[in-house]
Length: 334
Image (cartoon, rainbow, N blue to C red):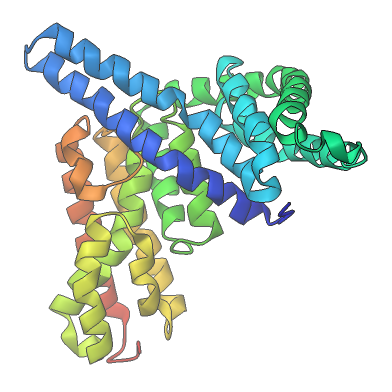
């Protein structure tokens, strides 16, 4: 039994296992729209849509199961998987699955303690029969309460996002993208990213997710362009790192910008936030949306109003680079 009660790491363990399902499902659903819009066979479009939604249906169970597994090992897998499935059917969604994944661990730990007192002769059937059956029973009962409590919250958040006017969408994009640059892969970045993921659970195209993605791409791409245009501001090591950041930024790896904040964080970080926020606002303005949580330029083809994302990306990158060139002293970053 692991009993590693690090909430952030346990949560990210579940999210990392969830991502491939969301990516695959989102791409399949996006392909269904492409086939449908190109007047191809409706059967092909339907097949992609059905398969994509099937892939996505595993997402919340996987999230919940691996959050629980990260803390309590194999005995927690069945209760955790069930908690995520019940969150999906009970419409408590991403938040319900996260809560279920953490709290079923208490059920599992209690069962481990109680069943450890059984006769040694019965220990062989404990992991095969008793843990999964009793764990599933108590998890199902527990999730009734979770769904009752969380479903109204999830419904309210969905309604809020869907009812935003044009200005609200722009502000949402500005804030979400800016937060992605706030700590460059740290807790605030990850929480914002998870909120973006929550907005696309079920295959929904989300402007918020597109803003989150562009906000995470701007810092590495902005500093990469700055090292190209303003070489006198950077030492050789950072110029070399800038070349790598073209790749990091293109595939949505925000952490590539971290070395550039080392010596002048009070200058660099606000500039990165401004550049990302401008890009996020433009994503909102152009109503660009996506149903895929990762990939950067590799998934632009699957976006709605993809050209808006390109304009936002280039604009944020240029603004970031010009501000760095204007405000950084010579070779003060090392």
